[in-house]
Image (cartoon, rainbow, N blue to C red; front, side, top):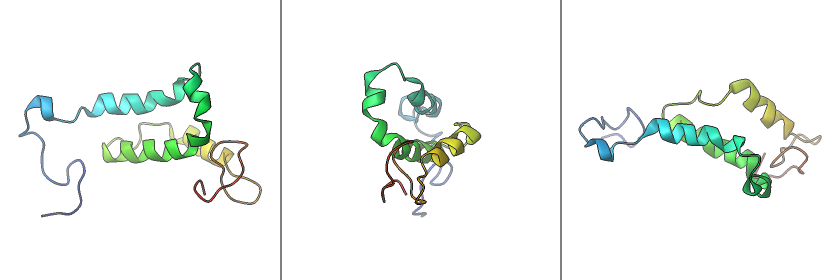
Length: 102
């Protein structure tokens, strides 16, 4: 038995009834949509979570077997825009560097 889990690792979910199978595409689309809600107040109130949210989203997409679901170049540019002059990373562009983000 493997201690590693994830899509294609611990066996097939094909034996599960359809209502118990993970709906990968809707989950991936939801994660992709999160950075498009710039007209919502919650988007701006959670700016301090932006870089962490990107990490969480990329991790979830990787576990779903969709590691390329977000545009690579834009993602890298955003991460690098969070880097401060001291080499550390802030939670979002213009934020001070913090150990959690770095």
